[in-house]
Length: 166
Image (cartoon, rainbow, N blue to C red; front, side, top):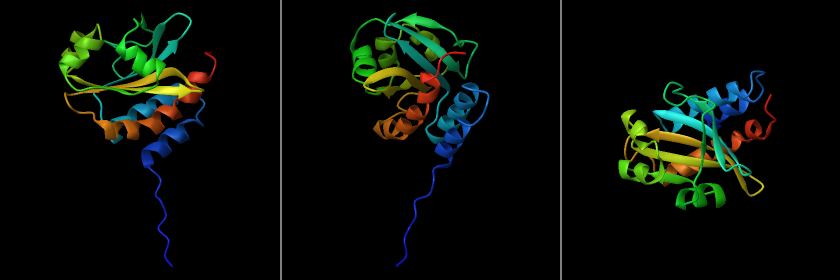
């Protein structure tokens, strides 16, 4: 009897291997950026952390630091997006410029970068959203299959979001 063995996903392997690098979380974030660009696609990629106590999001990674620098912070207003992504831990897919306008105050800057579609993938631990991977691309780029494909990458981000800031 011949058994078919599963093959490892090279992008997941590259992200998992990045955990062993000393330069953390930079090595992990760079590996995520590269892997997600190849596996799913993005023009803009950011990683945000969320602070329940202050209700703020902080940008800890950006592939476009000019318009979206690391360290940027914003207070998140309660609404359908925060209830879905932060409270329930559901991915958010925005398919059009109108979807972006309904959710993001900076949608004009996003659109100016050639992005009209978004996938916000929560990073969850013990029932809480600690952060999110945010992939932006042209309109109608993301679909439900991308949520499943992005989930393991999001959860591989967890050690960097749980580690104390150094």
